[in-house]
Length: 198
Image 1 (cartoon, one colour):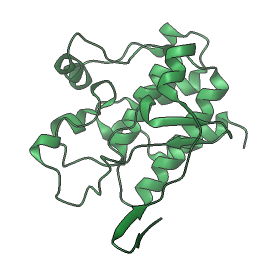
Image 2 (spheres, rainbow, N blue to C red):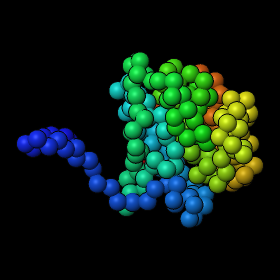
Image 3 (tube, rainbow, N blue to C red):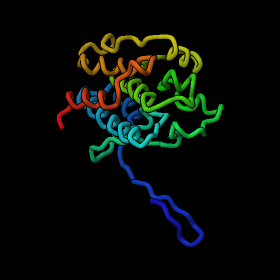
Image 4 (tube, rainbow, N blue to C red):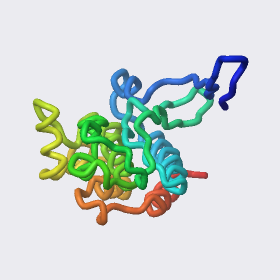
């Protein structure tokens, strides 16, 4: 909510109590499967909502996912969110976002991205949350970006053999370099729903 009192403007936001996913992973390591499934489903719902309003988040990563004490899972920090049809992205914004979780098209064509870019970032975040390893890593941010453009991630079940095969496949589908090869948000949701009790 927002408003004005006399000459003062205010913006009221929801107060959230919980733990940031990045902090939880740093403390406890890879998450149990059931929790991974819930995070995937809830953040998938958030992306579906954004997509239905022609918005993209542009910075989906564990540091922007909160596991609330009341059991809800929230996507945070919409500071980079954009409507891709608006021509307001500058050259300086090409490398906005976080190298470990940035999609190939965001690296190359920051003005030509859509919700599939966020789905790629979610896939990278889930890979990290499930395995404790980044899908792409290097000694420098530029090296990481190059890997997003040219490398394939190590099969996640090499790092976590017991991971549900359908979930592992979904993560790797999200990490396809060509966005046309990734699932749609609805397809992503369908797999998550099949893995998670309502």
